[in-house]
Image (tube, rainbow, N blue to C red):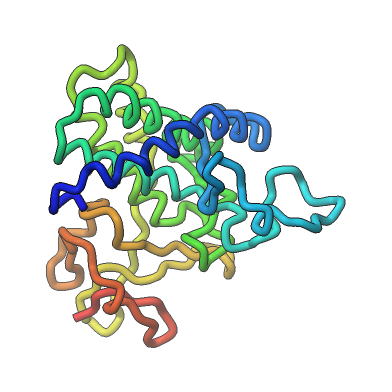
Length: 250
């Protein structure tokens, strides 16, 4: 839609989520004790979780805010996707009113949620947990989609002119606290963009998605072992081989 100039078809999407922002902030504070805003992956037009995902029949011991649908119970990625799409829209349109009234207010709250909800590890880096890597891996530490999104979005937001006082400094500080994007070596000597990396616990998986971020980090510089994609890999190149999730191997 951006490349074809169909900007008017995107405005209702942004307007719908912008109208939900106050509710997202209340949810973050009430359910998770955090400032900022968290966005539901499957939402109603008025901003609530769908009943089927939140749970019609919830166990009495289940905490408020925890989903019965395990595919999205700790899914924090949606706000990052929307922020990236809004940044793309702004780059195409240079719509200053959209930047001031929609993009920046929403981006500020989504990033504040990550900053305030999650602790720092022993090295002072953000530790995103509890979390999941997209819908598939439902117990993840620092899931690479979220980490990649934070790197990509903060890299663009901090370059915007005329930000509110203190906002650029706050975002630059968060940038320094981001963990690196997970990566792993290729034993066979083949060059891969990324493969899965297991942390200390068997159920903890870190994985990277290649959309929507056209650039989401950097890999080690040795070209004999690693290659890095400056553009997204098509999903068809993602597959499982040799006991690991390998992406874009050559």
